[in-house]
Image 1 (cartoon, rainbow, N blue to C red):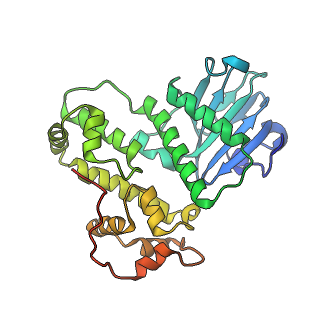
Image 2: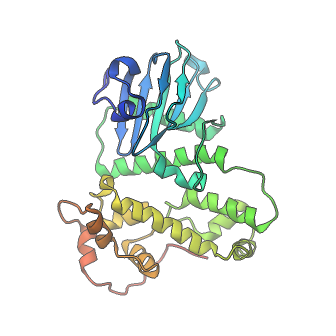
Image 3: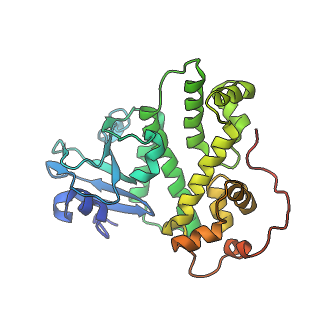
Length: 310
């Protein structure tokens, strides 16, 4: 990118009505659904536009200079709010991470997100360092590598936002324990190695206590975790950004140990198989992949090991 913006990010124009001259960007990087921009000296203020069809949220990082960058790091979570104005200190450089609001809907449990300053935690510092490195990276990576980086970055964004919107003191009543467990599931659902046993260990409780907490609200931790993974798999199957992935790769990125485990989970929930979901969404790959070919064959009945436990 060498100090100039390549392909001025559309999100800056649609959300803020900015041009390359008024946005003050010096670098921009698009990572599938995520956009990262670096700004030397933005104009004195930005203002959200009206009628945004596919809203993004922005995480704005303002860091100190030189060796004190980490010590003076500040960050804000800013949802698209028509009419809201963002004002800047004239001399401060900034990195902005633009993230689809739909990817964070679970963090707000259906409510409307509101602007918040994010907590200065090691996770936030790591997210800033990652965003800075990606903004300055000019290499071209393979599709699978890009997907892996995007999912890792998404997980870090979700974690940083969840620390503000979902964190609260642990209580003894079943509702709050189940809510806390739900938050941990959201942060780890993409990992096929994450199980109910792992969840109980992370919460420092027994699996029996975890089962009782969910039973009080008419659910089971196993079912909730599987539903979260199915929801993620459906989103990826319907997304054109992931249309080049095989079903096997997509299953792994959704937290399933294999395509067979994903198909069985969808079938158990009375949902179509992955190939049908893709076909109905118009996101089938241009050329058949191994995963797509598997969908046309009948299930061999082989019992794959791994996946959900508990």
